[in-house]
Amino acid sequence: MSAQSRQAGPDALVEELVRGVALRCYAERPHSVVELLERALATSADDVLLVDPAAGTTTTYDGFARLVEGAACTLLDCGLAPGDRVAVLARNGLEAAVAIWACARAGLVHLGIPVDSPPARVAALLELTGAALLLVQPVLASSAPVTDVPVEDATDVLLGREIAWRYGEALPDQDTTYSLIPTSGTTGHPKAVQVTGRMSGHAAAFYVRTLGLTARDRTAIHLPFAWVSGHVTQLAPAMLSGGSAVTMATFSAPQLCQVAVDHGVTWLDVVPSIWELLLRTEHFALPGLAGVRLAVFGGAPAAPGTLDRVRARLPQLRLFDVYALSETCAPVTCLPDVDALRRPGSVGSPAPYAEVRLVSSDGQDVARGEPGEVWVRSPAVTPGYWGASAPVTDDGWLRTGDLGRMDAEGYLSVGGRAVDLIIRGGVNVYPAEVERALLGTGLLTDAVAVGVPSAVTGHNVAAAVVARAGTTVDLHVLQAAVRTALGAHAVPRPLRVVDGLPRNANGKVDRAQVLAVLTS
Image 1 (cartoon, helix red, strand yellow):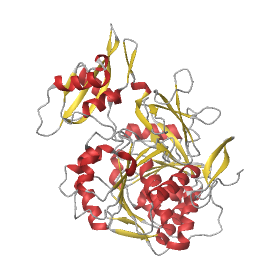
Image 2: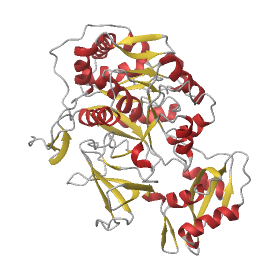
Image 3: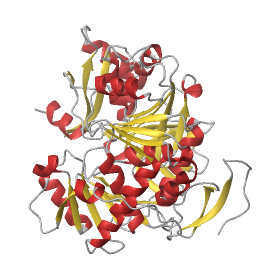
Image 4: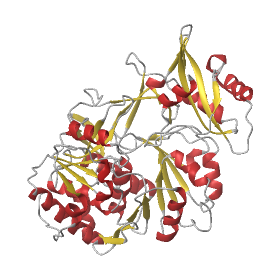
């Protein structure tokens, strides 16, 4: 069901019913990754889609479609039925990309497993999703658990057969789940976010329009296909624009720079921790990277000063800070480079299709400028976790668990997870604000604040920090900075300088490990 478009052109919005709720949607968008590929074949069949340096292959749109069609038929020949889950353990590359599109083409559900997963984690994901088949690249065989699930060679199944694209075959429904994104959130237990064509279609349309991507653009995919980043944030937008992508089986900052030079990369998707790694690389500079004109980043705040150093190295680079979750796929908000200097600490204003509320613990909307939990409503919100519902209200609002503030003009700042909130003597202390005050001294490259249990105050503030190279840090100076910015109740004690902060596979700080270090 749709209503009249709210505006003309590629950004036109219509109202559609999504699980019974009327939501703003892009009028022009692909409804599935299969439709996206079929559209691209009409204009770009002989153009390069994927470059896989590890395998030494270059694949055109037509070549990719032939592999997808062949793999889809092979999977169905294995006795799988529409809706069955296919788990894939493969490094970034041609196989990983074909797996997603082939599952969607065959009506199966793709489950990408992070390649650093130990066998026990793989087994837990197989059990959680009831996977009917596990495809494993031979090089990753040691990560495969002993399991009753049939195991096949990923390369044989995914690349062993080519069939010309069969036009006229039914395309997937836009609200059918075609992929699962593993995540643990704050619980530590595996969950699998359902991804639909409506979700990935909005993401692709957003990135193409916001970044102005064209057929001349090429991205380097180093973040895993098992995350949203690989296929939703990068390959789908590249395909929608008629562009191309280089896949990286492994990541290092020097390698990413070299790939960008060797293959004419024009845009990147990174998590903020990668900026620091790139800044330590002498090749992250002009003239070698003069062709890299755009970068999207998100997932965590960038340390103050980091982006200034990035801009100094690559002044031509336009930066886009996005706030998104696995549960939304498409960005909720975006802060373009032109707004960054006047909106420090913000993650931008809502995307055209997204609505954002800040809600108190008793479920009431908070005033502008006041903190609250971020609630999101958009057509890109997941229908749920596999086998479980997502924290979505009856009227379509996703409770993100993130704390934030929204200013008078509708720009959002995110202050960390609600579960990470520190309540000291009845006073709320937001870890992100403590971290921002510490990093604002210019003496540090990283900082994290956590709550340490106290019999007197409930919790005390503690922090671990990483000093900038060649800098001797006076802890009293850091504590004074927090006291000045936030008050005495927020001053971290203990405060410890460490060599580096522990991070998970998503690049986010592991606060449980930090707490263990600070209390040991």
